[in-house]
Amino acid sequence: MRPVMVASVLLGLLLAGCTSTRQEGSPTPQASQPSPPTDSTSPSTTGSAAVRSTTTRPPARSPTLHILSPRPGAQVLLPTAIHYEVIGYETGYLRAFVGDPGTSFHIDIPFKKPTGVVYLPNDKQLSGRADVTFWLVTPKHQMLANREAHVTVSNLLLMGSRSG
Image (cartoon, rainbow, N blue to C red; front, side, top):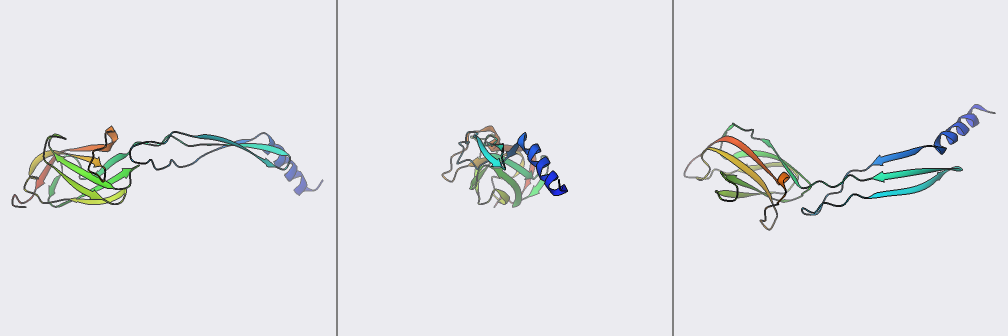
């Protein structure tokens, strides 16, 4: 037999007993409703040998907020840049609470991209040392309920004009 034919026969024999698994990226969930995982098995043929290919999608993640800066304990001069990353949610607001979330002063800052920079404004209510909680909010100003949708940056020193 010719060397090329031998290689083809060997490759065919190897493929006859192989199973390949491939993971695809997770889909973007709609609002805060994750998509269920899906499994699909589809046979295909290579020559006379059947190859089974299994595609598995990992479960979709809940909308998740990451605040990249400022860091806990930082001193910031207002207005200041807030570097953020949102996973599983496209657009909405970052609600910044100064103090206890839900009961303290807050401001909604719109974001248009999953990763970027928004600015905490120079506002007379934003001054002094505080824990600032950033919370993902829908375009209709409703707070997302999952625990990954909020981040607290503790012990920030907010420096700005009280007349802002």
